[in-house]
Image (cartoon, rainbow, N blue to C red; front, side, top):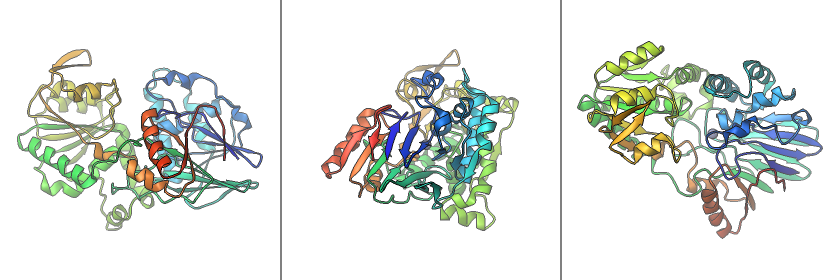
Length: 431
Ligand SMILES: [Zn+2]
């Protein structure tokens, strides 16, 4: 049994790994490269897509599913296995990607072709390809997210996919993996644990209270999938503690996900399921208004606070949030709250440095609003959680993380006597 990484090596995007065992070739994820190096999406695959026997998707994030349509464009016609939640969310994610991609490397017909080939595989069900068997375990990172367990040739192999942040409450905690001969693990936050989640929520509520009390607007740039809905969940549970103000969800993609959520109830934590069982939707807080059209979004720019605005894109690479910030950052009554990762060199990272002025959509804007960063909302396992999850594993191959973070995690694993290496693009490792 052999695993060959073809993406997310010493970086966080482009997850795509080829498992070869018992005469079968199985692709684990087929993600898009994003940000630096994204031109690689246009390169041909380093393997022949027509020679694959199956594809498994761990979750619906673009960096794990974004090259799936390209696989079909290049001739793959076999099955794609995913949970039902992953299938439904992948459709939303791929359709949105088609809309925002500057240089598309697949078309609508490729998305349809890919989705037509999806077969459902739920947690704990076994997929048998001859003597190779595969199953999904709960990864707690997105609704329907999974890690993969493969058994064949007398070996057990585990691929983590992305592991969720166990402190958060919307999704179940990641399940422990079985003891394996090799684990290919993510290490996104391999360098540090997250701040306590209850403290993060308290800090978030304090910012909201102060800002809304003085009639200000709270701008929350957010990923449309998972993070936006989680913020709505926090506002649902704590709305009674906050001054009355409208909450605008100004993201058509986040709205699509919100509409889908009630049909995915069984993929959520028991707490969330309990709300739905009582006939409540905990992702619809008091005061929620969904902004559909660009015109309505524009009228919001001129309206006075107090209000909360949740809009994309989460990393300020585009989207309606930029217009809100261009109009609102010069007002000291307002607040900008980052609840997601801001990459080095990006606009978000620049704003966090608190310059006096910031260039937004071609205009210089004085930065007078308060700026806050809440790392505790991260959707990934922190260092301590990764160490726990990998506790019983003799051999670990690290991917999905910046090199220095993987090295940091690797050092701690090695201190416990575990054999560790960093995944290298195109270099196969024997399980
Ligand atoms: Zn992910």
